[in-house]
Image (cartoon, rainbow, N blue to C red):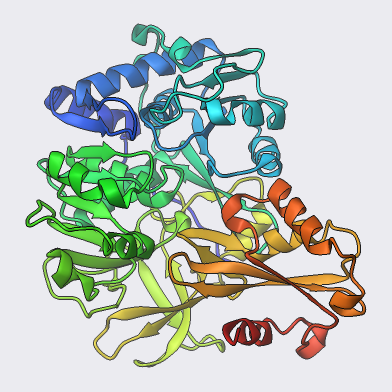
Length: 528
């Protein structure tokens, strides 16, 4: 791979995330930036000025606890205002927010906290004991008062922990520092085809790139209201929604998670004009009574112009992106017609290649491997944390990032998503590596080999199915083997990663070099 470096001069020179927030706090201090709509409790509103003030207060508290530039802080929260305040407080200090999946189990958190070498953690009552026991080396732990607005079932906090409110200090202690756009600002752990997730490092310039490009792709304006319910520990909510709204000076309406029954009432209450969708949400909304009118201008989803647009009376633009690309590398046009069910055309800010397995470009009508080229630290992630080998391996000799996705180039230039790496599953919007599940299943005694494949699911898109090889098959296996596998998965995997079906077999189909023929296993699953 050729040497990759960031340009000396770029669109965010002498600018960073805290300076962007300060611009709006000074220019539009009273305009609402964040509206919190919990499922329990009252609506709360932060103007731009109030939000920036609280960010600096929490930054002061973090500084008092020894958090310095470059230090990493674990943020293990479901959607809530504290998650955003903490992320931007870390950015204000030049620290790095490590946002982790709130459905993670102890094994995940032990890995995340150790791999990122976090100095402290912020979580909520439901996860406090889990975080305290899993993150043994943290120097402090702050716990929010509620579980995303709901009163906690257990009000006892782990020893040596404190309330999130205790983090609030004197904002005068943390003046705005000179901007350093190439300083790391965030880390998200993303599933790959290896057994452990990789830590994707974003710089301030990455975050600003996502903010500006998403706002442009979505045609966001200061009058827009962006409903956000997808998880803040994922790129979609963090970049496509919150950072994009911040760039435009718009408003974010935040919910704990998606709720089909609350979607239209909250949307109408705040005159929401934009939201990011995933197929699961659209299907769920089809079962709800739709209002006679709404304020939505656009929705974003994995496909453009689905048949449901006429039903909901809204235009949907398709898009494709990854944690590593920060924003959309392929996107539908906001103003012009898009081919229905496509993901759009290459964004003007990236170079896109669609190649045959031989490395040659595909012809129109062909399906090939999707690669994307940009600038590391600016339009592409900076690196995989503590993994130079994986970072280098993710790029080809021309500097293209290898996405692992396959797409089809249309005769009209529009691109359609075809398939993902066969060892990656998409479970209700979450990426799941088959190898993560296989690693846990193989900890159960008596198993010679195992293989995980996806089964189509009407609501979640895909769910995991595991084939377990035991000499002699099911008849020779311990009677409680499936139960033991289920228990191991419950301990070692987040709920969405757990197999929905365990099949004990005497042999597994093989391909060349005696590899497990997963294509054959998928055929078996599809046939029932």
